[in-house]
Image 1 (cartoon, rainbow, N blue to C red):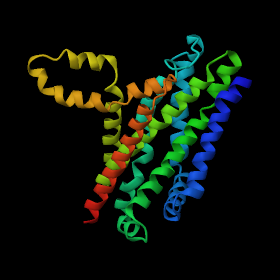
Image 2 (tube, rainbow, N blue to C red; image 1 turned 180 degrees about the vertical axis):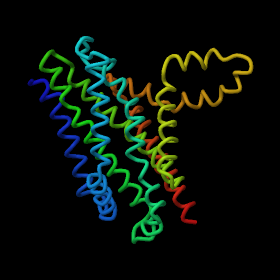
Image 3 (cartoon, one colour; image 1 turned 135 degrees about the vertical axis):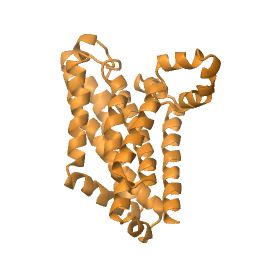
Length: 276
């Protein structure tokens, strides 16, 4: 348990404190105002609770009863647990983020939000960070699997911490994609379905069978090559897999941050188009 404390609890506590300090003390007051409003909306309604229960049911439930995580004997839980978390999040995160802007448009409060004494970026970041906290809560509440594995064996807690961090970054990517789709439509269901499709493509694009299919294209199938090659360039499975296995590189972090930043800029453009 000492290794669990040193290689999992301590890094997790440090990152959590940095995250909380950023939210409460560093960000501008306008962002914090929107953040608190949105976070309260998540937990006053059943949305956050339902999404957390669904995620825990999929991740921990399937890990034990379908993938038989205890029988794999892995030190890092990658193939039996972390590999599947981005797939589960393709369902949960779009459902969590579909209301970011679609709800404002449906209720007719978009203009009110955008005409408040704050910039669109304050609203975008405030809403995004509130949903990010719910994703963070999902991962924190899935911790019993780490405790169980430590009780029954001797896992690599440092690598498992990297797996959780990589999963959180993937969740932020999915949330940023959903933010764009939510800003483009007033229908939450449309935002959900399109976001789910895009996030699923981002995950599937890194699977070996897809890579083999792209390299084997011949004849008329070459017409699909630019589209499929583009998917391979932005797929998240490869950087996620390396990050989750403890192979940490700055390039992986830059990839995730750049992807999120691009999507948030696209959200800003979509909102400006609506405003015009």
